[in-house]
Amino acid sequence: MLISQSSKNQYILKKNLFLKRFKNKGNLREKLSERFSYSLMGDPDSDIKIGSWYSEIELREKADIHRARLSKYGRSKMNGEMLYVGPKGGVYKYNSDGKKKYL
Image 1 (cartoon, rainbow, N blue to C red):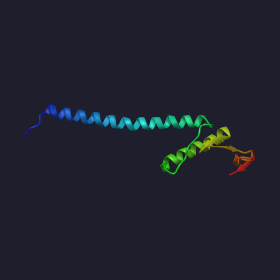
Image 2 (image 1 turned 90 degrees about the vertical axis):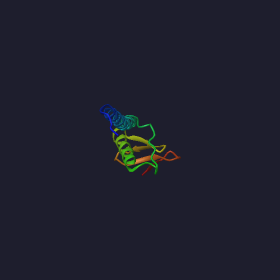
Image 3 (image 1 turned 120 degrees about the vertical axis):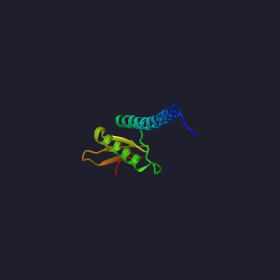
Image 4 (image 1 turned 60 degrees about the horizontal axis):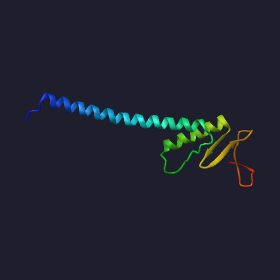
């Protein structure tokens, strides 16, 4: 059975289109992740959720964002708790009595 040149060209075009779409979806995911990271970086009051189900890369990225917000703003909210940087550089939170608890 002979395959015509035009059917080979169509196959190659379809394959290239598929690969292009596949690669673009990966780029889209990266761009969305970047935008999300920048939005978290700019607002220390937005909560960063950290759980055991996240991958190591995601955990490191979120921890880096948390540390950067502590340095820049002096406060950062993580897992529903607002954490602050003290005058000597220690990190603390307020307990239910309203007293500082250093971590």
